[in-house]
Image 1 (cartoon, rainbow, N blue to C red):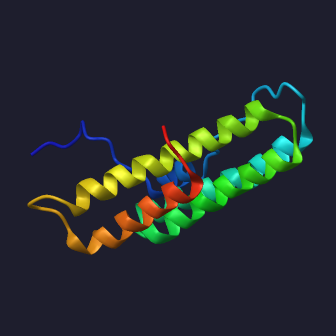
Image 2: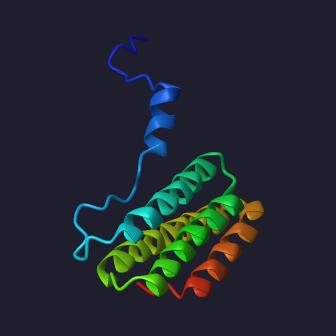
Length: 134
């Protein structure tokens, strides 16, 4: 069987993609340095969440997303840049919601993996904690 047309995945390419910044600050209305500084830590936590998710370490992935969201909330208290805070929180909340949906799909139904149900419940609590309502 000829597999010449299949694309080979290089581990370093995948790792580089996972470490890539998810959120970029293209234009901050207030030109706030605080936004850029917080964004660095937010992206670090976001990247960690992606890596943990790929490793099926869902609990650590959820915790990393919560830390990223909390960092965005800190910015809300320190800055008047509402547009940056909204962007950061919406992106992180949407990612947590997607993880929640994936965990639900994987843990329920006839072929559901019951061992994933505690992670689904943890993600539900995390969504309630950050009060994310899309």
